[in-house]
Length: 144
Image (cartoon, rainbow, N blue to C red):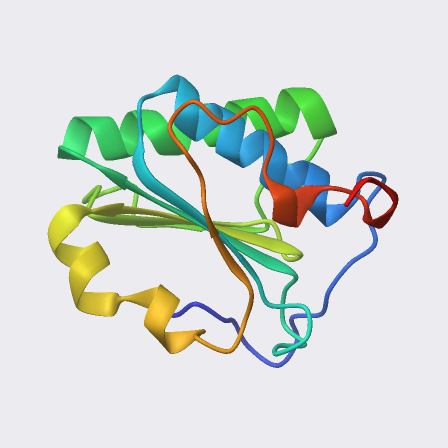
């Protein structure tokens, strides 16, 4: 499964900042008890997207539930639908691509194998605490 798409893919302007979409994804993940939620700010190391939001589900059912919760919350809060959605048929690695934010919901085995945090090791990373109300990487510059 590819984390980037064809050359025709370009970042797009939306009515909500990418950090808001990423924050809504984190909130949805937390609501479904996802584990190991991680945000990677790739703005300075990739021209493809702004943020990766990654988490792990403990079962195929939980992976699906997390992905659906993200899709629903981002649609409700930001009015955005994924540009691409992959992996829903197997629920081992689901990608919801909002262009400026790419959400990855893994099962434990695939998360360990693909290790996206290592691949994007030059980018700022924040591991989100289970009970976190805010994610520092997603705060507007004026609030940091």
